[in-house]
Image (tube, rainbow, N blue to C red; front, side, top):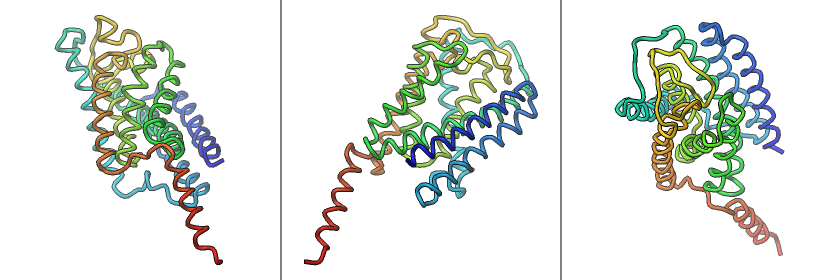
Amino acid sequence: MRFVWQFLAVLAAYAVGGLTMQAVQDNDWLSLVVGLTAAALIVFVYAWVVRRTERRQALDVAPKGAVSKVGWGTLIGFGMFAAVMTNLFAAGYYEVDGLGSVQGAIGLVGFMAGAAATEEVVYRGVIFRIVEEHIGTYLALLLSGIVFGLSHLLNEDATLWGAVAIAVEAGFMLAAAYAATRNLWLTIGVHFGWNFAAAGVFSVVVSGNGDNKGLLDATMSGPELLTGGDFGPEGSVYSVGFGMLLTLVFLWLAHRRGNIVPFGARRAARAAAAANSTATLPR
């Protein structure tokens, strides 16, 4: 039941934040304020519902070190997407015509912060974390990644390939990042850095959600396999490749830190606890 209560609580906060951000999306300054507020709200609700249902503090959103973790995550996400766009630029499929909209980029800071925080809390904080306890890290990564990819089929210019690409490069990668660090601040930063680089800096389509006006006035054209077509560069094989590479790095780190949960670990722990309880009964 804790999964149900946590999922419903964060989903309610997700809905409130999402509807509010949509209502102010035409005002860049309001988008900044509302987006950052929505991000803070979803994290607060998550920490509250974990404390109520699990009788413990939500250490994966602990305030200590939050700023540095978000910062490092943002650098990782931004660098990953910049690598994708560098390849497209070098191949001649992405052209910069000049400067775009600074104010538009400011609004996208808030919008992408709200989106990153809400999606990370829902998909990594609740779905991946709790499912992992029952079926282990690898199966939970696979399942939560697929669900994350399928959720993007609801977007305006969604494609089946785009959903598969998102599942691999983001769903798997972000779950692996959470497994390696056991921290939502870092995954929120990675998610934000990736999305803001795409929309706020390079001004490209994000997950099939239409054009964005960021810092650069640019155009992109070329083979859909490389550019992602109407879905945007997240549907590019470059993105899938870099995402897979980073997934392997995070999984290696998780294994090195002893953070991989094996399949059946929960049942084994319960059996051990039961055996220990039986052994200590008076005869």
